[in-house]
Amino acid sequence: MLITTDGDDYSSVSGIGETHLLAITGTEGSLHQCPINSLPFLDLESAVGGLLMTAPEGTLAPIACGADPNIHCSSTTSTLKCYNMVTAAANPIGSLTFRLDAASVTIYNETALWVTGGTDCGEYKLSSTDLFQAGGSTIAFLDLPQALSQHCIQRLHHGVIVYGGEDNFSDNVKTASIVYLTGPDSSSWNAVDSLNKGRRAHACGVLNVGPTMEFVVAAGGILDFEDLCLFCEYYFGGEDIVIDSVEFLAIHNGDVIGASWEQGPKLPTPLGNSASATTVDRSMLLIAGGVGELEAKDQSRNVYSLVCYETVSSCVWRKRAFELWHGLSSSVAMILPPFSSTLGIYLHI
Image 1 (cartoon, rainbow, N blue to C red):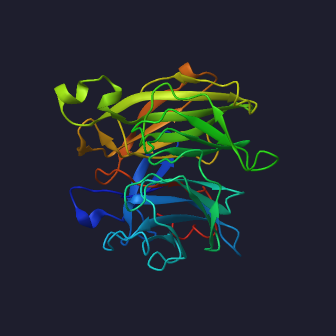
Image 2: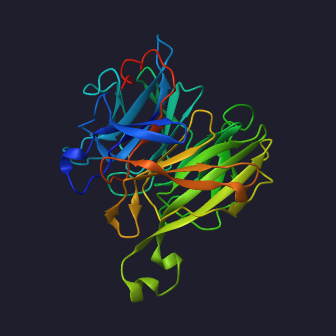
Image 3: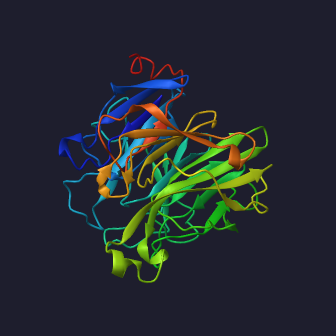
């Protein structure tokens, strides 16, 4: 089950905060209006989320955190509100430091959501991070290696990797870093090979390829015109371009130091600001919605899947037969477990 929030819907304000449930069976699938709670109070352009282990039930629940779009941004009073999308979407279970365009990943056996970077009320990029725990408490956590927004952060077998985004000096960051959250390196980031092409607002995921190989994926995203050529913005107008290039970092037996990014099969179409999530067994990456070459005027309803085999060249993109209800971007996506006692009654379609 792939659950997505609506994110930005430029055609209908009322669409913001709804949820979609995509039931994927075999090679096909179907789309359902999600029977679990919508999130009408969230500005989902700033949203983050993940599956957290709830107590005392010990089951995974989808958590989404976002800002109230009706409250003016204030560095002293604004926060991100976090909601359990199953039990009580109208009542927040906790809050986070206000940050837009942040990235998040669940860590520590799904008991904490690590929310990283983003921008503050003055659009200044942040290196600070928060750890939102399943019980609703929040603590400051390890800073990013640099201030970042619209970046990717993903969990590996032996650590957490952050890559791409934009900082306070460049719209398209190439750098990548890894941190090991256990052992002697748990409080420091280690630089790894940089992306060949800097990008922000890209889709991301990690796929298991065989018993010892992981593929880190950076798919599509947004590129500043100045990164293409010196006078591109002057001659062609505009500031950004949406791209279809995809890069892979193949990690064998956890050896990130010896890994390097390589170009792989392109997306079927240019996409940025799309929602992405990997299946529970990390055999497939799913990308839903996003913006195309015309950015906000070209929001996608499409869902694409990526499956990889032994090599990067074996990876295959496929457009799924089902679509979202309407075009969306900047949304949050999560894969729900196939079986869950807590979610069972909500997922009975």
